[in-house]
Image 1 (cartoon, rainbow, N blue to C red):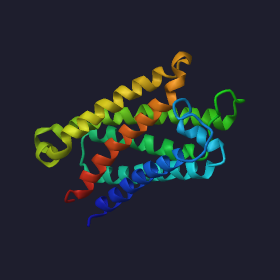
Image 2 (image 1 turned 120 degrees about the vertical axis):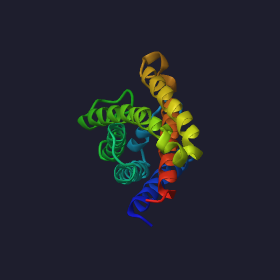
Image 3 (image 1 turned 45 degrees about the vertical axis):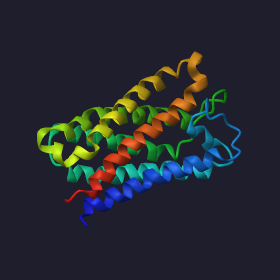
Length: 206
């Protein structure tokens, strides 16, 4: 097995583990409202370690996948830009593990401000990655290789972009009550886009 496939499998394992931990977290008595509170708020409670691990495995997994993509997808400006944005998303998720968020209504902290900034970069980067990279797989010379997943990637791309815009809108006070729900849907679609991309890439011959 080529090392590009190995790191891709490692990456999708991290993304999958993040999803599993997130599901487990929502089955625990966290005292937070999943409709309103973002996932990162859970890191300020008694299950802080679990949330920290979730962000670490997601960040490391995405970065590992990104390394494989950087080598295995070949050259081209769009590929380079897409890989860069995936890396920004992965790095932002890795770093937020060390900077807990400020729960709404609590006093603002330096760590919380850094968390907000990192999250903004990450949540902007992954829709841009999907927009830039997905059309590459529809090119004439890539179409056969990616035919089985291209339509799925396109649908997920649209979902990531739409939810990214909606997520931005829910920062408004009048829509804040559904911010947590939209963020979870955003994580679901962006992680699914990365997972489908990563799994198909790992199965390819390199």
